Length: 268
Length: 331
Image (cartoon, rainbow over all chains, first blue to last red; front, side, top):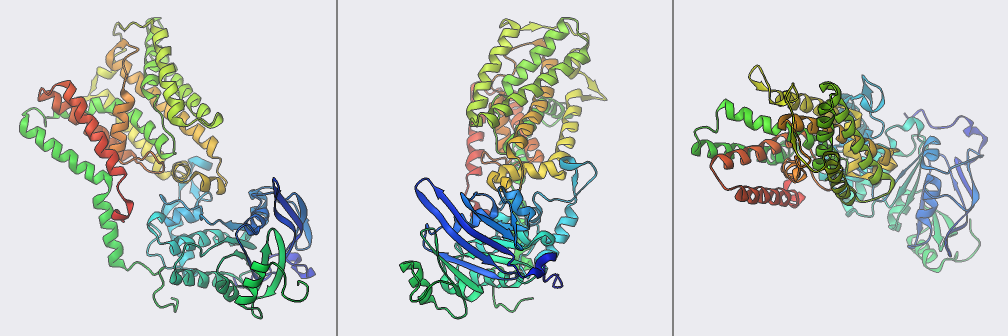
C-alpha cells in the first residue's frame, strides 16, 4: 500500500486534495457554519478544535454529505464536486466515523468490518451465501496489518472495550482503501481513557500516509497538537485561525478557542 | 507487534478468550433453556409413565410444529427490530379462507395455496403500515390483530363449521409413523436456519435490528428491508394457518386466539429480544418444545387448565427477566 502515495492521478497540479470555499449553513437563526474555507493536503492530518457549537461537526457532516451547505463550494484536486448525499461522498473516497461509531454490537468483529459489503457466493445479492471464512481471514489480516490487537474476529463487538470499538470502526473505514482518500473522525477519543486513547492515536498515526488524509475533531488539545500537522480553530461557526501544530502551543489554541480572535496578526 | 506496553486493545490472551467463549456457550440462553427442558422432561417422566414414550414425544412435536412455524416468522420479525402481534388473527383469516374455498369446491391444493398467499398479503400490509405510516409495530399489529379477527368472523358469519374430510385433514395423517406437521417443522427449520444464518439477507436482518441507524449509514434501505421481513413472516403465518385449519378440520374463526401470546412466550424463552438484533431458529425451536412439553405434561398430570395458564405466564416473566439481566455479567 505504501506505493500509493498520491491517491489521485491529477494530484500533480498542486491543488490541495480537498478545498472548501465559503461554506455556509444555518439551522433556523443559528449560523452553524459561516463562510468557512478549508484546505486539506494529501497525507495530512488536520485537527479541528473549538467549543461546543463552534460548527465543527456540521462542517464535517457537510463534507460527508449528511448535511448540505446553504452556499459555498467543495473542490477535490482543484475540481468542483457535488456532495449532496452520503453516497456521493463515499464515491469520492470520503469515509466518516461518527462519534457513536455506528457499530453493530450484536455482530462479531468480522461482520462489522464487512457490513454492507459482504462477499457472497451462489445466488445473487441478498440471497447469496456469506463467505464467512474469507471474511474472518481478511478481517484478521486487516487487524494485523493495522496492529489492532483484538483476540478474535469472532468476538461480538458489544463485548469490546471503548478503544477496541473505536479501532474496529477505523478498520472498517479503511478496509476498502482502494477508494479511500479522506477519513473524517468526530471525537475519536471522546469516550476513552488515557491509555486507550493513546492506542487509538497510535493507530491514526499508522494509517495516515497511505494516501490517506485525515480530519479529526477533538476536544483534547494536547492530543490534537501531538497528532495533527495543522490545527484549525473554529468559534461560533467561523474560522478563527489555522495553526501549524508544531509551532503553536496548547495555550495559544485555548486562547483562540475562548477569545475567538488571533492574538496579534491576521489569520493564516 | 507494537511496542506499546500494555495497550487496552491488547489481545485477550488465549486462556481468557477460551474462558469467555466457554462461559458464553454454557450460559447462552439456548443451553440454559435446554437444561430447563431436560429437567422438566425428567420431572414429568418421573411422575408420568406415559411421558417419555415415542408416541407422546411425537404428539408434543406435532403440537409444536404449527407453533414453531409461526414462531419462526415471529422470530425473524423480532430480530429485524419489529414485532408482529397479528399472527393469531392472521392464521385465523388464512385458515377460514382455505376452509371456505375448499367447502365451495376449490381443489385442496389450490385452497391451501390461496391461503398461504393471503398470509403473505397480510404480512405485506403489516410491513406497509409499520414502514410507510411510521407506526410503532406494537400498535400497528395490535390494530391488525383486531381487524383480522373481524375479517375472520365476517368470512364465517361468526360460526365454526366442521368440514367433510376428503383429504382436508392431511395434517392429521402420519407418514412412516411420523405426523405430517413434523415434516413441515423440519423443512421450515432447515430453510430458516439457512436463510437466517448463512445468507447476506440474514446477516442484514441482524444488522437492521441491532442498529438501524448504523444500517442506514452502511447504505441499507431499512424500511424496504423491514417491509420484506414482515412479508416473509406472513408466509410463515400462511403456512401455519393452513396447517392449523387442516389439523382442526374445521372453519373456525376462533382457532388461533391468544396464539401470539404462546408464540411470544416460546420465542422470548428461546433468546430473542424485543430490542432487536437477537434470536435464533434453534432457540425458538427449543422454546416452542419447552412450552408444548410444559402444556402436555401439566395436562396429563390433570393440572387444572387455569393453573397451566399461570405457569405459562410465569415462564414468560422468567424469560423476559432473563433477557433484561445485566449484560456485563455474562461477558
